[in-house]
Length: 157
Image (cartoon, rainbow, N blue to C red):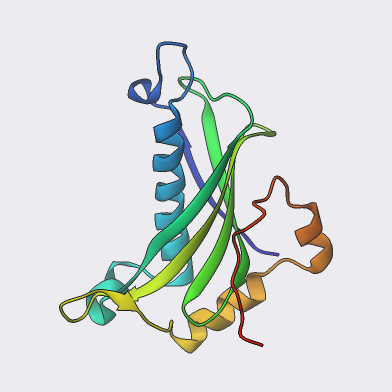
């Protein structure tokens, strides 16, 4: 299982009147981590310019487990739970030190922005291969928690 990482800290403007990071900013940090993940798998500025390909999130589920406070150093680990030609089932953990403060499970679609209307489109073969080799083993997958009960890639039988 490959982990893709992104690091930052909790900014003053991300903190609410209780001294904790606002829930909306967890989403922002997860989004920044997806941007970093995209670069790691080859969806960088040059790729987007050349192919008009990118990733859109179509669904996400979050689990708020602990607090992050102003100034805390935070790291997001992104794990590809599953993927196919057009979809990436992504799991992310926002860590404050060794503590999981929030987890996010999402479905990302590879999108072509060529033409008038964005539409799902297959990723290049090398990108698909990289994602496939990043999946956790069945044993590793069983240890990833908390998990959503309904999100996943449905395959035709």
